[in-house]
Amino acid sequence: MRETVIEAYLRDHVKAAGGKAYKFISPGNNGVPDRLVVIPGRPDFFVETKASGKKSTPLQLAEQARLIRMGRTVYSEVDSKDKVDALLAKEIGKI
Image (tube, rainbow, N blue to C red; front, side, top):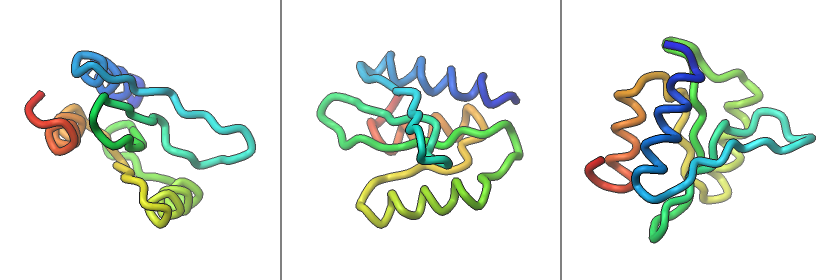
């Protein structure tokens, strides 16, 4: 499955839950996760989406580790709709 399909699935399900999955682009900071998810009443978190079976690059892994060290939640290598469903169930309950 293509990354754009998984990213759209995430975005649409977050929106349905009353939140926003911002496309996260940070000039000069390569490797940042694809999406910053904000849902009312819940802590924000980052999501790195991937095409099915693809892995994060070393630069992406380093940036994810940096965010985790700063106390942020990062979901890495979300490469299926099932993984989107699982992370949303964990973060916001039943979807």
